[in-house]
Length: 215
Image (cartoon, rainbow, N blue to C red):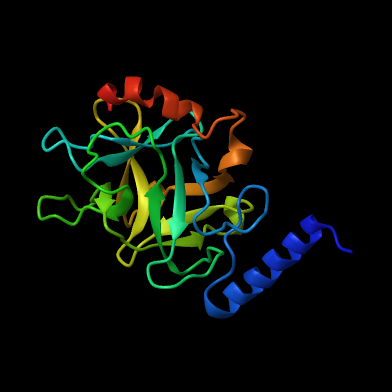
């Protein structure tokens, strides 16, 4: 009789092969395992380390929130889902929704936790990535062999997710850009692999209510 772990690995390989025939290739986490729909992962910026958290991206209105790159790992966890289909493995070159997954939410609770591009008329040529969509599609694309193993970038139909310095503090803000120099290269750390705490709350989540007034 096969061990359950071997059966689970075999099922994962079969599902990954099925994804490849319909979408791109399976997205891999830092351990080399396929990223699974609905499970929690930390998005880790490759060039700077740290993590991603919500923040106030404008003085007025305060909501919806934007997204900042902070130097303190691991940030807040996210999950990936498909807008119109139900595969269990996330694939490259396919539209997915990205949603922050946290019960310790700092502000703007009337908005959802899905990511979207700020396409309002007041947005700049590099609009902010904000939180509050019902669902908005992003794509996960391989960053290229020169970027390293299991390294990716997030894209939309009109650009690539990048990071620009914020004027008031040292953290960077996520925006949509067509400037390759600003592209945010990322890796995905599975939630339970990236934190040593025994609860479902990351260290940054515990600090977030105290940190948030400065964002």
